[in-house]
Image 1 (cartoon, rainbow, N blue to C red):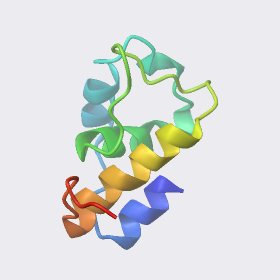
Image 2: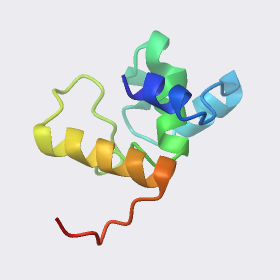
Image 3: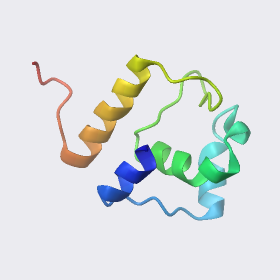
Length: 88
């Protein structure tokens, strides 16, 4: 879903194979990312939307609500520049 949102926002998602591998290799579990998701995950990392934790992406773990909220917040910051200090 995040890859589609990135495409809608016209963020670069078509990375070369070498760029994709170079990004994923920086994570200890980068090789565990499914082949069909590698380019999308690498693009999300490149744009700062996905950061991982403790040098891991945790591609086989379930996403918590807090992690999902963080992804959405980072996407909004990248796409429309929402400042993290905005109070509601």
